[in-house]
Length: 201
Image 1: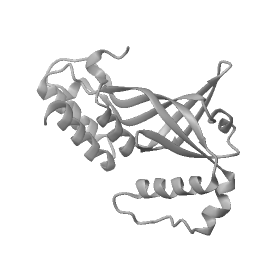
Image 2: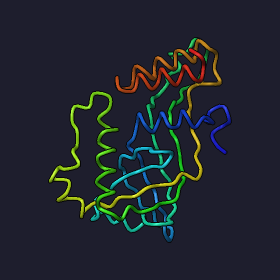
Image 3: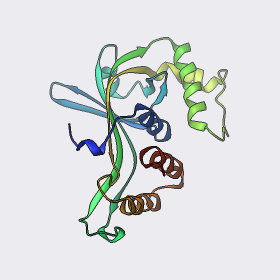
């Protein structure tokens, strides 16, 4: 499996952190050598990915029961200039990505779709919860007939976390600071927690 083992993330707990912190997923289905690709937020509930799609999206035909899909979550990423290292290095790109494969189960009952929409909104609104989607919201009741709800049972996963792990401790720290500098403030908590788990920083 590529990349090399020192760039592979084997802790599913950290993969969960990535999904919670960066829920916008790339969902990929393949049929007859044709790719169907959609970018949508997915939330993780009891190790199952849950999502919704506009029924007019042709990808819905490939997100039904028993169909297998690949899902990609991408966290912070940045170019690393050799100038940030203490030692002589070549230019590179650091990134945090997870690939998951799973089997789709469609959510058929409108009531269940709405409940999942309420839970997803609560998850995405965290931690400030400035908006609460009420189950009684008439707008949601009007549009639910146009929503394709589905779940993905995760069958396999692999983390591809390129964090300059093969460098010296000072250079790892310099690469971390470059990643922080070039990432949004919302990414900082995830990055700092990730480095604590990886490098006990």
